[in-house]
Length: 171
Image (cartoon, rainbow, N blue to C red):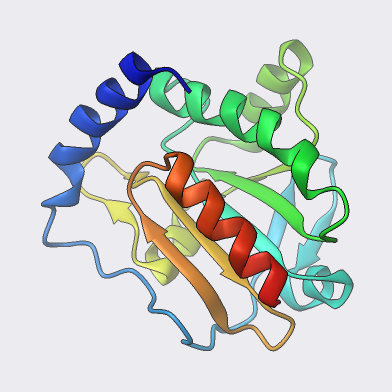
């Protein structure tokens, strides 16, 4: 990621970091199970997904967000390092599933997307920004017992990717 991109993301992040209404789930918190509506036309529970290894659940504002697009490109580049880690990556957007799928036809990614159109998952994870009704950028690593092993709210940078790799090593 270029220094300019990092500066832009940090500047954007300042506005939402100070949002006192956010109450993200905490490290080591055990989550209730959720069924995700995935971009591959399947529905799957988090507990089913984590049977194969940890889940990296990444919330974005939407496919329309230029900063989220920048992050997804960086994530795509980073995913190659994770191939032997057996982690599942799912990006969550508040957009309707059809809109996500239309966007994915023009933009290929090696991970799945999930639609959270009613914002229930964002509410549960404590990352819904009101009154705009989109999610704060956030990343959660979830183990097979549905406990949170890593929780970031805000933009991701190189250091965050290193910490995610370390957390995946421990999972």
